[in-house]
Length: 445
Image 1 (cartoon, rainbow, N blue to C red):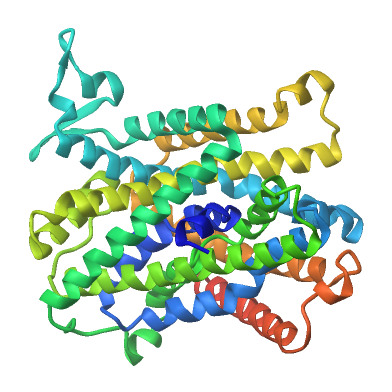
Image 2: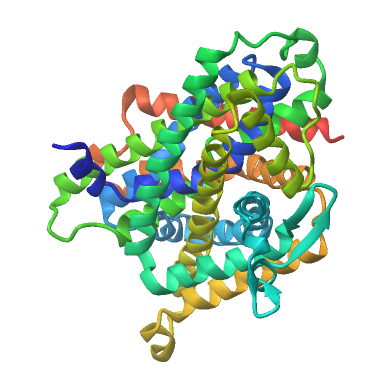
């Protein structure tokens, strides 16, 4: 099968990649490499390996049963797992959506300013002012990341309104392909032109310091490769995007291939971003800025100064498309899973059902709540992302437990349940998640 034909047959796996490759890669992985060189790359690899079963359980359950994990949670223990999942989602969705959106806004502000859009006059006003809003800075006129974030939420809503799942699917294929190519190219040039990163990595003394572990390891592992909620999202995308002409065996095989390409592809990209941070920033002595716009400009300026001015638009576009795909995918996923859960408890009235009303009510609530959070409570990007990743880290063992029991229960045909060594591997990963979350909570007291 030709590569493009293979790509056309992929769907939920690339939606997973669009949601996963974002803050955890561009921000957390790059900062880990920038601060500690290559010494934390094994942490990234270990987190991806140990979390693999719990992300795989989402598409596994969907392929084996034809239902999402939402329905699976509803059928477990009288429905309590679904109630807990909904409460956890409501408690985290605004901060997670805000975190990915403000990073996207910061990168978008850089791109708009770099392209000169903010200087194009339209009827006595600048086009940038009409579209985005702007502020002045010592370096020149730049776009306000919070204003841009609000408009990004509006653009994402319109994309979902026009194309729904099919357009989201097509966009993710283009975005992930562009990101992969540009990242590999940038890293390849950095490796060829640069020396092996030199400096003090995350050594024995750092591992003995709980504060440093809480500051660096927990955020890095918390969203690596992504919040565990995405396993549930993936199961929903798998059900809604399934091909009706496929029989059970075809659906099973395609789902496994689709997931593995998406999962291990994002793992490689995480390694690439750590390496980019190590080769380009590590040892420079420059402190990473906390605010979204300043972080975007600083990061891209460092890359351009090391790789050459030609790389500036390449890195900027790759970074922006990474975060835009995450913002778009999250804005679809939260309402999609919450609307599905809502229907299980409160059947959708006919007038609302005709227009997928629950989904759109949740989209409006998510977008409005996120923008209110951005404009009133968030000033420091690093603090916001650390909080979001910490919450995801602490809740991950609970979601992993729900998913494990769902795929191991009688709801799934016996030959599709985790077996033998894979089952033991999943249990070992579950122990790891609980121990690491417990350790993090211990560092807080």
